[in-house]
Length: 192
Image (cartoon, rainbow, N blue to C red; front, side, top):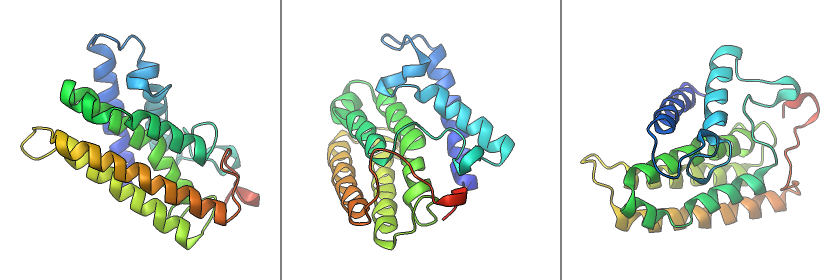
């Protein structure tokens, strides 16, 4: 995990804590904030564990690694992106929060296990597809967080669509490597 990832996770934990305490309608549970089950708890746990323990759990998994595997994580991001343009128009803060939660609690783990220095596989084409998905996520964040502070709702839909399309390529590359999409499997010893 990079220092940027840790900083992002710490910032996300602070944002989620603030959102949980603000009493927004429909936000009855910080553990299921904005449609991402356990996102608030997962971000806070991952940030604390990574900062305090070097970020690893027994078996080589990173602290806070969500259950399941790549296919499930991508499915959760896709579900969270559904209706993002409408949410950005209706409630820009909620859209920003949802995108950040999805990024920190799912995309970062996809990258950690299947990206350039992936713990689960070192497939060049898969890593490139994951890194491109990362850049697509950043494009979405730029649309939701422009310098002038006014969400560019017209940019959110295409950015979310480009990310969804890129995940198709990530899944295709993983299938080509024969990886189990439903669960995370680390090489013997927990490192590639």
